[in-house]
Image (tube, rainbow, N blue to C red; front, side, top):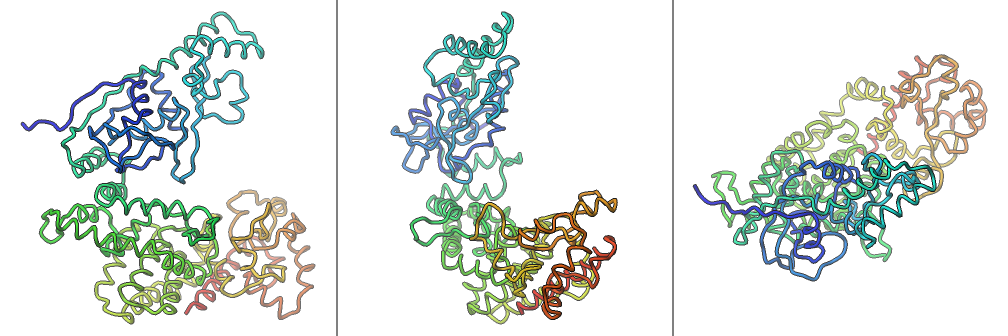
Length: 584
């Protein structure tokens, strides 16, 4: 039997944190330095306090180089001799709490984790404002190891503070002292680490990482590929992460930035776009083997093939992260009537539309105007119909496979137009869509499409002389939204009719967009009372337009609610269809 490539080493938590602080243990770029949610950190401390096992660690004995990352938001001076391959989330969390070190979150913000402890019953909690005011808690257990007081002065200080609020019995004092002592002694908690030998290559480390995580739900195919990128295309992964970080905040320098009002992308999301552009594949499980150098025809792995495939991925990623391409695509969304992130109900629809946009631009040379038109129509309909809501990879794989027969610009446009025509049938508009509008979900794709249609039709807000597009402008911010969803049949009015279920009251067919001042003025008034006061302000022609845009049936204000809803859904579907046809 061949020998193992690892040895077993025992550590205590105190020794691990000491080595991390010195920089002897560091994080390689095959993982990102992001930690769990605070609740999971709390659970980790709770398990250790109770003496439960919390899993082994996997290190790589390596001399380290400039590609390693230090744990936490600060930097270290020592070149690491041990790199964390598995267990990074646990060690980062423990180190952050024991040393009071800030960590980097998935949204690229920096914060310190605060875990509270109630000695009376050994309860751990995530510190919040109420807990910080509660004298029963140590509001921040970090202070136990960083205060420099030692356990006895710390226990005495806590007891004195508690006794100011209530009487503490001798038995309770003993329990509290014991609990704080046990908590402090977690620095002696034992960990087992498996250390990969220094002769193990980076590719082997990446392979081990994938194998030990592939059995659980903690790692997906996108993580697999990001792992390989860290080993074979370190700069490529850093470019992805930088782009995603910069897309979250508006540039203060005035320099070009990926910031937008539609999507705050994660690296794995843009990776999917790169993979679709480079290999015309949507199923990442296949791409993992491709990037390891597997020839899909012969099944043979080779370094040459791996280099070739990574070169294709790097080129595709350069196109994906190109700011001109990125913002040109965002204009397609604006052309489709979608103005803000709250209108995007499917990130997959957006990402796959961006993939097709880049394929049309790069591979088929579709002219700018034609490309914006076809992608706007494609996104509108794919978002409306939930094309990529169920089995998104499978559906996108079908769409990409259809492109295999396309040879030129005309073929690309004809293919997408054909799919759109097959989807947007008369039965869809007249039957399926009204049924989809029968929901109370505020995140309904059909509701977002209705708002988009109002933008495309340049509609005015109900009872207002301002346009919907003006008040949906994402750059306008205030304490209260300028535009609000108003119950056409107010809640209190419906309650008087015996209709009290939220799902019935909040049907999207019962909502209309109004200015907040009108929403406040209408309040709980019956539609038969408030509606004529507003309608009298408009000419017959003006009111006819407003009635169409806001899908109000003739005589709606005196209708029975159960009769009103299906009638309005049909009219809303007609508005959505009319708006979509403006994109043709």
